[in-house]
Image 1 (tube, rainbow, N blue to C red):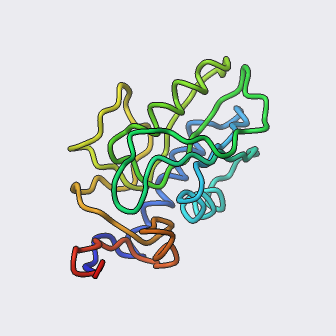
Image 2: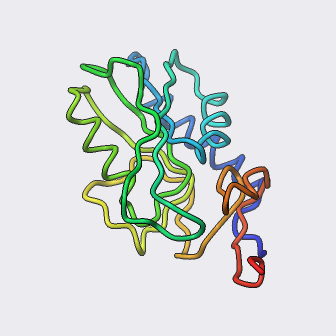
Image 3: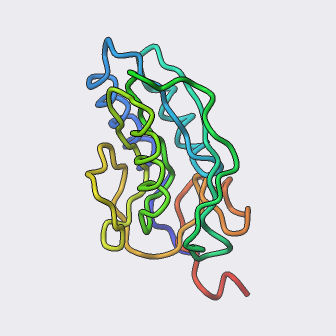
Length: 172
């Protein structure tokens, strides 16, 4: 594996994103909705840096198997919070093809929130096909398969502190 984003750079960027979100949402009491499983590390780090009263909820959506998209969304867990007339910040580990985030943004907008924003620590802008701007991006990365900082390959490598490029030889 080769290093793409260091733990030190991640910590600095998360703090910057949290400061911006704190400023943007003061007096709004947003609900942060994390997309499991990958978001948990980023979301925990982000929320610890945010100086707001927030609510937290999660969805569990699966669209990947091993290292490729299935092209199908499998909804495993829905939110329990009432988001009508509330400000929502979706927290994602990575926006790759954009398939999952497009699905979730459109689904949540149908429930009447005041606003829906997206925060993603990683964004593959070159390959993402989304019909909105990502509000809070940690790092734009090339279209390589990455692991670490919550991202996995078959549920492995989530615990790595850095974001690493998983190379074909690593799969042997």
